[in-house]
Image (cartoon, rainbow, N blue to C red; front, side, top):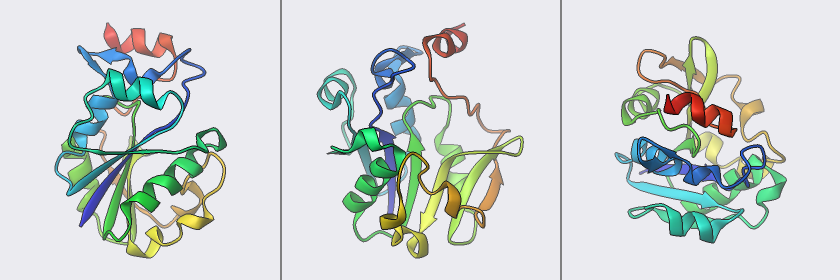
Length: 181
């Protein structure tokens, strides 16, 4: 079984509000990211800050919503919450809600890579999605702070995806204006 975990718990402090709801091409960022996970067996959306507002402002149908009460601790807390919700699964695909240009083709390419873990790279720079298989999924308790599995991905298979998508994320309103042009 494959499970997508979409991390969307942050408060969007640099953005000045819930960036998950910022619109690109007429749709909230979170909907773009969720669509890239549509080929997986399950899709889990991890919300935190402003969870009710994000739920009300985006179409999250077809996904399981979980709330990370410890969202302020950072990405590690959100990822732990998502992995706990995933339960017994063979593989997880981790994505971020603020990357609207990643596609199902990127997810498929990274999932096809061998090994216990794989990650997309764009012109050699590491990014998302990240794929974890059973051997690493069980190590979720080791996650702390805002780093997720970053320190444990040194051995991950790197999969170049720059030919498939633009990896930019939307962190500020200025970032949003750039991609809207």
